[in-house]
Image 1: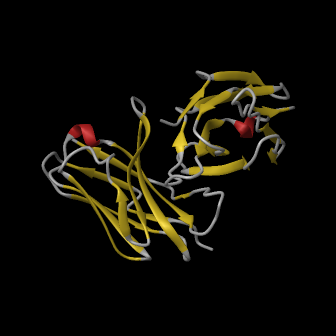
Image 2: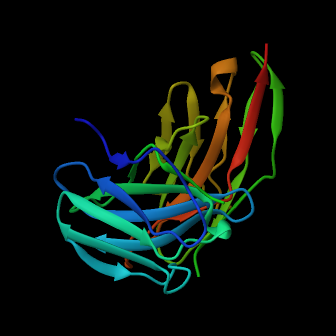
Length: 115
Length: 113
């Protein structure tokens, strides 16, 4: 299995620009999570999908952030407009449904730098 | 709400030393407990897990025992290697709820030759 795939691995953009991060979960996994990691705040859950439906988006910082999951094999996290304080590593993770253990499988992350 | 508390890092050890990273939790019901490891520049990987009281999870020489009486899940390894240098995260997934995991802040481990 290829694991969770994220693109791009690195993104450098200027303040005000739109940024789109992409994720392909592990085939057969029905839950998908977007996280943000910074030194100051650690690992933060942004949004959680189950069967392509957003279940909990309480971690999305503000309206500039949006996430979609149009099908079981693809999700995007968009920031518009981006700000320097959005600089972080963004992780996507997937988890199999029907499992009582609910461990997560993380992608390699996208390192976002907003100048 | 659910929470996980880990010891502050960094933890700095010499190769072949004994490792303990403390983790305590607060949760309703009977959560599943996990340790994840994050190597530099990579995402988190599941290291080990335990789903009920007194279970011992183990992998790659690491062990942790689910202690319900002390609400703890401490990570141990008898002899660390330089390649174990990473950040370690304790996490729980509570039963009867949405199963969204709760992560600790992470503990950095640095192992010197």
